[in-house]
Image (cartoon, rainbow, N blue to C red):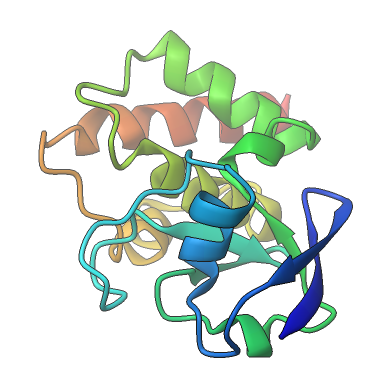
Length: 154
């Protein structure tokens, strides 16, 4: 079946089964490999994308459910003001170690800062809790988020 979805501001028509997870549409059909497969059951956060600005797990979001949602991936998040600041803070704080989870981490952090410009530690813990970093970069992730928050307050 054919579906038209909006990804990073561009309409894409894709031919896939209705129950195909968005993750595989992004990676295998559209060639956007920045969104990663981690667990396949929405528990690790590696596949996080934005749907109308809200973080969602693309590994469990069927193509038929995307509809008119505006999907933003790691390839497009830098086109937003906050996304660009988060990506820069990630570099400033040398957040990535292996980098595998960082797309999902950046998408989660961007959504947090868009909704709560000056998050508390509890806000950060809550927003980032579903994103696992096997390298343990949590301290640097928190520092990067706080850097962006401080810059937004200045």
